[in-house]
Length: 364
Image (cartoon, rainbow, N blue to C red):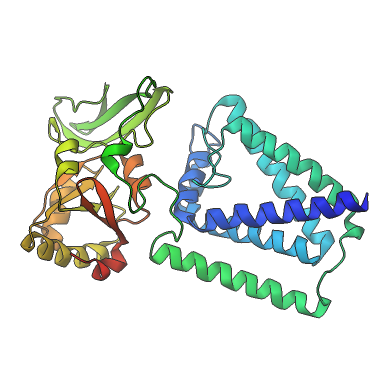
């Protein structure tokens, strides 16, 4: 039994550290996943949505440090109680998501290892069994370091975790596991392999008509509809073996100009999934970059899911002389974890990718 406890201690500790770090590397991405869980369609905890990012950081840090506490044998009773509480909650959550098909990816390991809801539930059941063993035999969890050093190890772990979280929030994730990482060719990744089926989507276009919201559903094309355009949501109708990038479209009025933009050799993409929620300081720096890029022959364009009124307001407030085009909000959130953020493309290949706070480092 001692061998089983030692294995369980190592397995659970390492897995919690790995899972916590992967999510801490991309806390904004994890916060988007939490927002899915908080939505009225899932847990109906919409009042928590404004705090999703803070909750994401705290959960990631606590998960990672719990793994360290288990490995070094610090406060075994407290540690095993916390581990048991967390895994019981996550097991319920993954079962709920899987059974009712609410959230298609639990986000347990971020974008590094996507898991289906049932895979996540199975993983949590295995972890639950090991944690129950640790809980029962918690007296066998002995320190591996001098006890006096434990508090310093945990204190430093917390500090380093929060510093790392601050760094990736102020810049971008250090490790990028998404299909929009530097070096990837967006045009190529949009192509599905031959003989493979593709996902079928419906696009729900929102319009404000005399103060009332009206939704028009299409298979992708921008609809002709009266009223002010407010945004678009993408719904997966049937899942196939789609291309890694399947929801990236640049829409100019009633035209789709995606291929045209991806074919150009010198392109600057200014990405802001929601102009209302964007960090306005970013547009001051981006305004300078846009002017420099235009002088050097770059095609500069903005991508957003916001409506025309917000576009014009932002352009006027920050004297932006480049156009904004429509793109799906989820796709924009996936492209870059900054609002706004900047990508440099060369014939569809991402050569540079920066948070708005780092635009001065972009080389044109």
